[in-house]
Image (cartoon, rainbow, N blue to C red; front, side, top):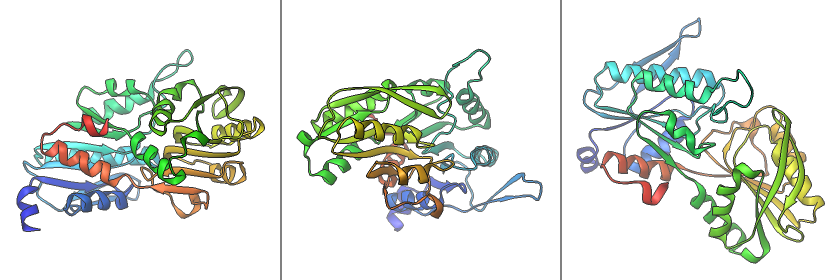
Length: 321
């Protein structure tokens, strides 16, 4: 441990209140402790941050995923960043496993805001030096930041998990993209599993409502796996599973990175024809959001390795992006 303290003495990991378990797992992977930061709220709801460690000249990595309540978690991160900056931290890296507002990355209708850019502006204004995140809804979000963005992908990790789970039976599996926007991610998984790809032709008549009009590709008698970046209301997964079942799929599974699971999403999944859903722990799953159908794959090792490579000024592109 003394050698680790000497080697990583400048590396300080802090955590907001959104996902302290993941922060501890990342720190344990590296071999350090999570540093002391008391995050509390005044009676009127304002956030107060009290740093218990000297951070002058240190390389700070602060973990805060944007889970519910999303807006509170964002403000909490901003206040923490400001505290580190005013305490003369050497560098500040915000580790944001799930970047909320990331689907509001363009104008869909006249007078729409681009909220993902607004959140990026707030984080930059707070004084952060670098962002580490996972599986943004679209790659263009990286350009919203005028600083380095380390965009980690969970594709290989989840593909390998699926392969072990099904025993590399690529000839029996078809990977399914829930819409045209998710084709790149689904194609990568299909290529890694050496299996075919199918695409659902999905329309959204209104927000959070999905209608499947066609299936491009062969799914009859296949084990189908819906691949997406996140599950929010679960409407797309439930409707996609129903369409695949009607098309003759032998079994339907789903796999995504971010288990947002808002509203009655878990109830929808439990009632759906989807047999199991594989997710990561970028967002904590409280008891009320857990289900026998949901399998969780841990991401601490990916983020831990990324943090070590950043701290040691090594490239993370080959292994993670």
